[in-house]
Amino acid sequence: MCDPGGARNGYRRAMSSSREIGTRRAFDDAAADFTALGRHLWEPIGEATAAAAGIRTGDRVLDACCGTGASAIPAARVTSTPCVPKA
Image 1 (cartoon, rainbow, N blue to C red):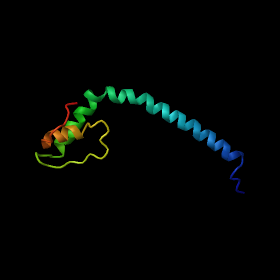
Image 2 (image 1 turned 180 degrees about the vertical axis):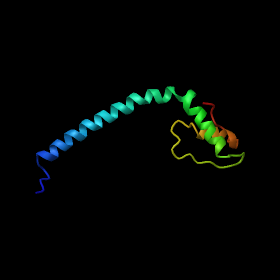
Image 3 (image 1 turned 90 degrees about the horizontal axis):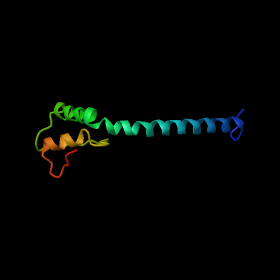
Image 4 (image 1 turned 180 degrees about the horizontal axis):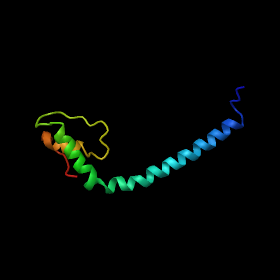
């Protein structure tokens, strides 16, 4: 029997809300670590990714999910793109 407005749906909403809060907290807590790891983890990985991709001067590169630019910035430096900040 379908009970679209019943108690079971209220329970699911409460569980979903509780999970959402837990997920938000986990991402908020991880954000500080993500930034702190930049120089030690993300920058070397980004540089290695740009090197492995075989990018050359004049190439065009799209990093659709660039986030902090760990791969996009090293790739832009290789392509000699002007106005790329040093991270």
